[in-house]
Length: 174
Image 1 (cartoon, rainbow, N blue to C red):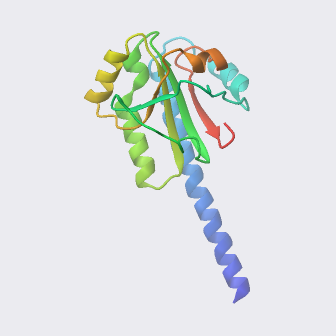
Image 2 (image 1 turned 180 degrees about the horizontal axis):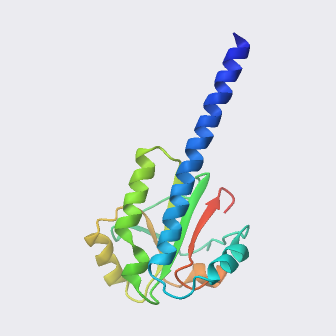
């Protein structure tokens, strides 16, 4: 009886791992699609950028973290506590609405929540026109927390690669 239980538990464990790996691959595919969707010529930069950023720790500003949902101030004390987090940084250079892809992000987040995948999503935005940005968030009914990076603190600390290569999969240690 004990041997059967151990075998059954291993079987279910491997099935769960296989299921989670499939979901992570779907998320990674989505991120790659976002990378490629707005750019035209820098496809050769991807391997170099991935190699440079793999294993690198994301530095988080200790001051002026302004979280907002639909443009309204909010608190997000546990936002960094997930085992894995997809972090994306967007600035106002280039095609802002293209970089945002809010409907696509919302669909991905909803899908992860429905499938009970324990992954966090953090968006940090530095914009030259936060009023217009907030309008776009409201039009798209994007009701997830966004960090309004008024002073470009994330980029100053981390020196992100050029857009659109600013979406990262983080582990619990960032």
